[in-house]
Length: 444
Ligand code: SAH
Ligand code: SF4
Ligand code: F3S
Image (tube, rainbow, N blue to C red; front, side):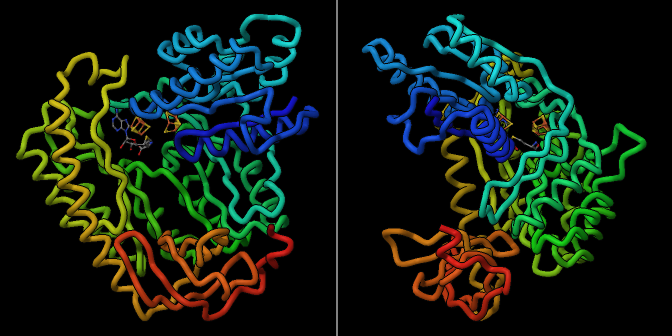
C-alpha cells in the first residue's frame, strides 16, 4: 500500500511513528510524503487534552467524506486516543478501518491483512510488554529516540496517560545499550532516552540498574549528546543530578514538570511532592550543573485553583527562573478523577491566568537568553531553511539556534558564537564544526 502516517502528541508518539513506519516498509509497503497520494492513512493520536482530540475528529471527518465520495482509502487510528472509550466511539462514528492502541502498533500487519480480507474493522488494544524490538535509526538521522520504559504508575488526578499507556515497564539494560551502540555506529549525534517517567527506570525490578546508572552507561557508549525526557520530581535523586553534572556528553537541559506552585493544588492533583521539595531539587541542580537550562510543564486553572494558588505558581516561576516552559490551561479529560469529581473553572479565568503566566515566563526566557550573547554554544544543526536565510539547530541546553545558512555546509555539531537573542531563539555565527558533521550532499 501507499502509506502515510500523521503524528500528534509527545515524543513517545514520534518514536511509535518511527516504529510503525519501519514495520510498514519491512512489510513491503511504500511510504508517501503527502496524504493525497496515500491509500492507507494512519493517524497516531494524542488524548492528553481536548485540542489534539478535536484535530483528529476534524481529520477523520475529511477522510470519511473522501471515502464516501469513492476514494479508495484505508484509515487507521493508533496511539493514545485509540485506547480510550472516547476514541473508540469516534472511530465507529467516522468509519475507521483499523484501531491500534499504543501498546499494539506492531499488530499493523495483522490489521491490514484482516481489512484486506474484507473485515469491517480490526481492533487491537492489548498492552505489549515485550519492548525488545530493535528499530534501526532512520538513515542519516541526527537524533535517535530510544525508549527505556513505557507507561506510568502515577495517578495524577487530571491525567489520562496511565489509562492510555498502561503500567510502567522498563526495558532490559542490554537491549537499551545495544540500541545505543547501533545508533552510535550509524552516526547518530544525539540520543533522547524516552519514557513517561524515566527516573522510575528499574525501580520495580531488582535486576535493573537505577536510572542514574543507566544514564552513565548510555553516556559512555559515546554518542556526542545524550538527553532524556520526561522526569518526575518524585524520584529525581542526587545520583541523577551527579550523573548529569559528571558525564560530559549528558546535555545540561532538564525538563522537570512541576504542574503547580501551590501545595493545596499539588495535593488535589495527587502529585507526590510539595513546593519546597521541588525547590530543593532545583537548588541542587543549579549548584551542581553548569549553565543548566530548566524547563517545566505547568497546568493553570486546575479545578478549585484560587487566585492565591495561582499566585503561588507565579512566585514559583520567579524563584526557579525557568528558561523554558510548556504551559497549559486545564482540560477536563473524560474518565479522570478530576473531571469526575471537581467542577471546571470558567474558561475565561483559565485563559486569563494562562496569559499572565506566559507573559511572565517570556521575560525570564528573554533574560536567560540574553545572558548567552557573546558566549559559545555547541549546536546540533539539523535543518536548512528552504525559503528563509537560516540554518536551525539546538544547543546542548536545548535552545533553538539560528545561523546564516551560507555558513553551513554540513549538518551536525557546530560551535556557534551567540550574537543576538529573543525570548525563544538565539542567533549566532558559526565558529567551527565538529569533525563528525555530515556533508550536506549526504544529509539531504
Ligand atoms: N509524564 C509526564 C507528563 C506527560 S503529559 C510528567 O508527569 O511529567 C504532558 C503534560 O501535559 C503534563 O506534564 C501536564 O502538564 C499536561 N497535562 C496532562 N493532562 C492535562 C490536562 N488534563 N489538562 C491540561 N494539561 C494536562
Ligand atoms: Fe500523567 Fe502524572 Fe503519569 Fe505524568 S506522572 S503521565 S502527569 S499520571
Ligand atoms: Fe499524548 Fe499519549 Fe503522549 S496522550 S502526550 S501521545 S503519551
